[in-house]
Amino acid sequence: MKLSDEYRLSQYKDLGMLAGNTGVHLVRNETTGVICVQKRVSIDRIEVYEYLRSMNIAGIPHIYECIEDGDSLVIVEQYINGRTIDETVEADGFFTQERALEIIAELCDILKPLHQQQNPLVCRDLKAANIMLTESGRVVIVDFDIARIYRSGLNKDTTLLGTEGYAAPEQFGFGQTDARTDIYAMGVLLNYMITVRMPADEMPPGRVGAIIRKCTRLKPDERYGDVSELKDDIIRKGIKHPGDRRRFLPPGFRTLKPWKMIIALLGYAGITVVCRAVVYTTPDGPAPMREQITGRIALWISQMTMVFIACNYCGIRDRIPIVKNRHIFVRIIGYIILEFLLILAAAAVSSFIDVFA
Image 1 (cartoon, rainbow, N blue to C red):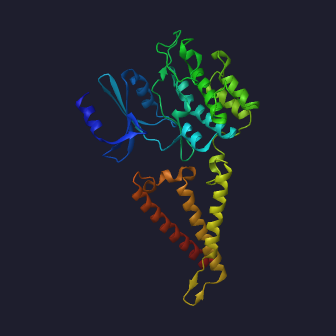
Image 2 (cartoon, rainbow, N blue to C red):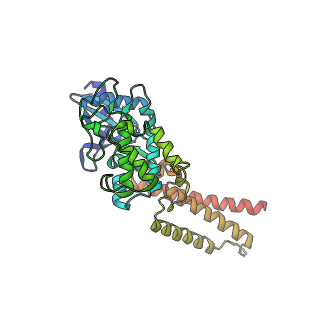
Image 3 (cartoon, rainbow, N blue to C red):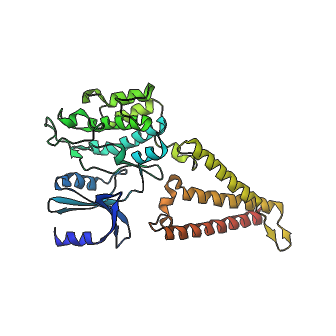
């Protein structure tokens, strides 16, 4: 490792293992304060990771460092805050068919620029443990450790790798992997999200089952030709705007889980009751009814705004550094400041309306 490389890595302070994995650590850039993920992979992965670093695609963690160290490669990449699909299934159960299709459609958008290069990059390990869902619902592929760059003219891969159940037949020596290999894995993933089982064990009926069957054909030529064709079929079979509609639903309703929607309704009702009970006064007694109403409405809007920020509606919290800080004390202070500013804004708006009404 060069001295300059050692210096670059010295800028990152080790914060400990991530999820108990000895090869993957959380680190913090001491200059910028940004939390990152540092891992060691085989040196033969350098072409893949340099390739990804040059692409800078939404839905793939940004790679900050890619440094050779003997027979290994040190990768420092963006930390993604969220849960894997595996963790989500374990905590919440299976996905609705609509949400599962939205995730697959978003994966198609992520993979499209990789697959359309002159030398396409094939992930080869798309599975529930390697796909993250951020708090705002965004889909991110977090593992490219066995990805490869497609080379025309080869009969099969030189190294046979893949995860049992998700790996296509060509990953076991029956041909060279290409974009259709990832499509096979997406079919398995779609089936798993809906049934929590492999396609061979159980498959949903109807239009979704038809998509899964086409994705997981044994012969690559019988699958979707590319991810655009797969996404088009998803849209044609019922989703007009994959990945877009549900993210605009209010917090508590985005997953369409009944218990979450009930809690959300109770919470919104509670905020409404509290704001309705607030009484505004003047030195001479209670304020006029018009001022009471405008004050209560302004307060209600301010508190609903706070809820939407806390629940990261459409990623709004990600744009406010003080409330997404790694340290909980800083986040608490941030929320207190925000609450104070929102109440102050509500009072100012109410006064403005009353003056000019």
